[in-house]
Image 1 (cartoon, rainbow, N blue to C red):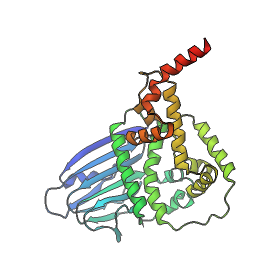
Image 2: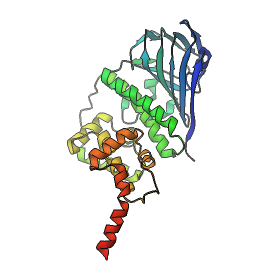
Image 3: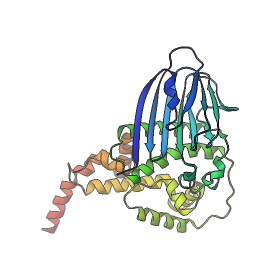
Image 4: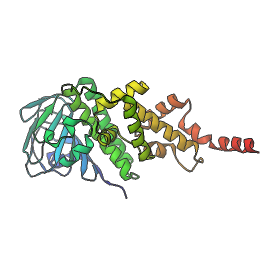
Length: 328
């Protein structure tokens, strides 16, 4: 049985619905703007990890009591007016850190949308693995604000919303390994904005790129057919994303994310080619390899292999007939 525990989505009809603005954490709210509060609130839970995305149409004041022992990292997805958390003035896609057992005070002066993930502080070493500054729990013990890069922030925001939409629609068949992949994908969206806000580090010595690539591929081989996230590799090998990126660029001329996507595309291709039509669906195989945007997956696949996934699956009878003729 997988780790996937919760998918919940509802429409808000009154400010009281925002008491559960972050799954598993009570939030006191007071409506500031005039009019009936309308909005939406969605939660996804994977083990003790959760992602919440909410949107509302009037100004709100939010306060969180200090009884929660989980770390909360949030992102501002949209705002029609000023948003402030503590003394931090938030801009679009900025990231906010609410440490465990710390009171929180936020003011939304108008319609806004946010995303918030909540998990144990002990998990940061794994989820942010490879980035020394992020994988250290002490980094997250103080409240913090990270200004998002405009381009990186917009991409991260869109990805978070798409991941939530995907998991809300396709939550039935997640295994522990695929659940872990989606959890890392969510964290990666937040981490991208945090990293773009940090000053560049000076790691100096770069290990041999080919030796590092060999270690990565050994890890991928050990993982078998399950999808592997970049942050998992960084944590397992004890390297930063920057070091990993430089190594892949040097050896392959593309970054590790593109490399992993190509590898997953190849896995899909092999599964489809070896499956009888009707025994699997393209969507199930693609999602099993971590592709949640099926339209984009189809574009990647066509560009990579010069044929559509359905053509690969439908061609299995032809392949089998050809092999039979060749062996006759």
